[in-house]
Structure formats: C-alpha cells, structure tokens
Image (cartoon, rainbow, N blue to C red):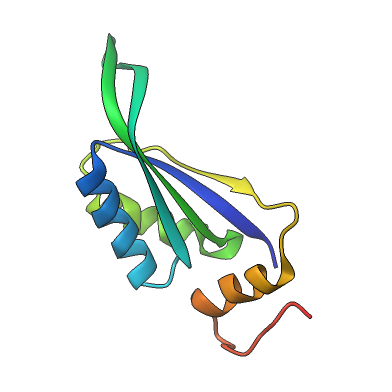
Length: 113
C-alpha cells in the first residue's frame, strides 16, 4: 500500500477546516492538519499576488488521490486549487496501520503486517 501526504492551500483557516472536514468525514484521508497564516506569492491571471493563506496537510493513500482531489475541488473556493501529493517513504507501522484502517477500504481489517 502506498501512503501519501496531500498538500492543499486554502484562502483562510475556515476554508481549510471545511475542506479538511469534508475529506476526513468521507474517509478519503485519515487526518488533516491546518497551518494558518502562510504568506503566498504567486501569479494569477497575469498579476503577481501576495496573500495570506492556510496550509492543509492530509494523510491518505495513493489509490484515493483522484477521489480526494475531486472532493477538495467540490468544496474549495479557488478556481484552480493546489492539491498535490507527496509519497510517504517510511513511517511508524502502527501509525500506517491506523491510517489504513481510517480510510476507505473494501477490507476494513486489512493491515500492513
């Protein structure tokens, strides 16, 4: 099983909370963390933007990424939200088993060991 960290930027803490809750409630991620008050500098529609944003980091599985992305896009306010995945190369086996158990699966008892 391949596990991932999903990085999403949101307009503010409230939106990050809403997006994170929507993804975790549907078991597309086991956990979501919010880091508020990030300064973002980016190009949008030909203009340089400098804004405050919130970072949303979710722990999930690679096989759920497409569905997770669709869920984020359905509740996110941005026209083109940042949703990117980074692989989890290694981790505490107990934590990874918990992550597996708390995300969508056809076999709820499936474990890594």
